[in-house]
Image 1 (tube, each protein chain N blue to C red):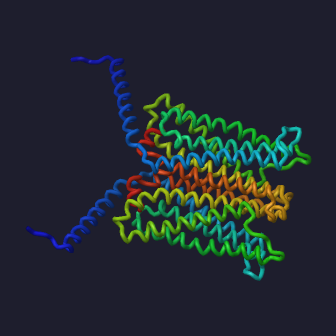
Image 2: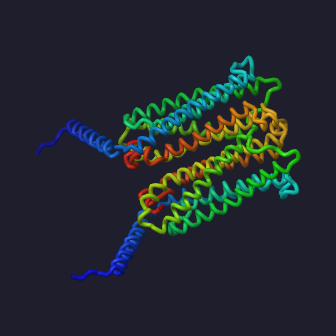
Image 3: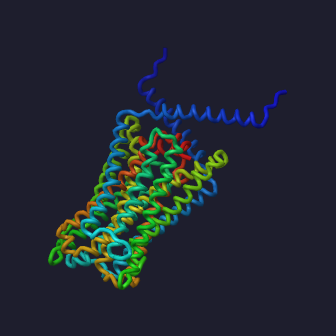
Amino acid sequence: MYVPSDKKRRNSCVFGYKHHLLLRHRHYEDENEWGCGSWLEYTVVVVCASILLLGSLALTLFWVIQYRGGFAWREDPEREFNLHPVLMVAGFITFSGFSILLYRICRCCRRIYVKLLHTIFHALAIPCVAVGFLAVLDSHNLSSPPKPNFYSLHSWIGLVTMGLFALQFVVGFFSFLVLLCCEGATAGFRAALVPIHASFGLTTFMLAIAASLTGLTQKVWLVLKPEEYTAWKEEGIIINSLAMALVALAILVSFAVRSPTLKGDTRMTVTERL
Amino acid sequence: MYVPSDKKRRNSCVFGYKHHLLLRHRHYEDENEWGCGSWLEYTVVVVCASILLLGSLALTLFWVIQYRGGFAWREDPEREFNLHPVLMVAGFITFSGFSILLYRICRCCRRIYVKLLHTIFHALAIPCVAVGFLAVLDSHNLSSPPKPNFYSLHSWIGLVTMGLFALQFVVGFFSFLVLLCCEGATAGFRAALVPIHASFGLTTFMLAIAASLTGLTQKVWLVLKPEEYTAWKEEGIIINSLAMALVALAILVSFAVRSPTLKGDTRMTVTERL
């Protein structure tokens, strides 16, 4: 009787697995062939989301430079504060938003590349959030007299959002990248984690938007006199428009993440998104 | 040759359909039998969500009665305003939150009863939101001098939330209740609408929370002096705690709606949730 050696068996097994993947991949592409309506939905969502993600960052920059005196470092704590809204919007909204949308934007790339890009975009958000956090702490502690920290509703929401973001990053990094080293043994665990990671990811994005909105509300009442705000002063309108862009993003990103069309075939998504 | 009359054919068809439903129902219950972990998750989510939904309403009432002088109608516009936070939290958070969670809480009821309860809870939210909206308009217009309306970021977010809520209610009512009169012909349309309705429903709930958080931020800066807020005055801590309860609700309700365990079998959910 012919008994194949261990190495041969392994090779044939690997070939079989690859062949299976190839078939599955072809099947996947066939199954996900899109009609005109789906491409239209895809284009509208991707274009609008990109405009809003970049637009909200641009609007924050414009507001801070035009109306709040631009940036500085520790020599001028009041202007150092201005780094806070810009970097937080860049990290929590623009980078995180694109990172979430990547799973809907990149339809034809290999899943591992999308996963790596998702990690890179979230990793880019980390220094933004860290420096943005440092900027507000500095601007409070270095002003004379020093201002207290962590008393406001906005700061509490911000802390919860940063905690959830960090947890998601660490769990996601280890579960979906590091655990790939023993791909077969961890497949079940990773598949079970996908919906939880996706759900908490979207919740973190929504909380980031809530934190931004409370921050903007607080700022507008601190820097504008009530009679200026009620008289539709330019700066008030710009801050309100920025808030509306963030609200539109909340609606659009939630829709994009859960739209059955953009999601593609659920069974394949769950299998492929380990 | 025996040709059955129209009536007989219809009867046999109806019986066949009912028999099919019966089989499907039994199959559904078998498939969804839960282990100990799933029941634990269910209990924790349902108990915590109920405590937070009722607790946030109770905390709003306590805050308004204890620190803001309680309620009045048009004779005292300043105290009439107090109806606004209480009724908006009751409508947009407590009633809407329970209405959303009903689909996860009621595991063994017939789908049509859950659907009717979902509609009733949302319908109960409508008078709360309407009177809450009227209260803030009145309190602005009747104060001397009258205060302007719709200039603030909070009011813009509130208007978007009310618009989405109304749209969801009208579309949901017609699609999932009125269209049941021609059940067979509209099944495909209703099935396609389910994920969109669910997605926009959760987004509306998150926007309602964002509107509440900006409203609370605005109120705390209007009624407390900065030195009172930064010195952890009691009222400030109560408002912050209320905001944290809303943040916890945002996390918990998003989790409950998208948890694969609480959702049950996806295929059946989509079929049954027309």
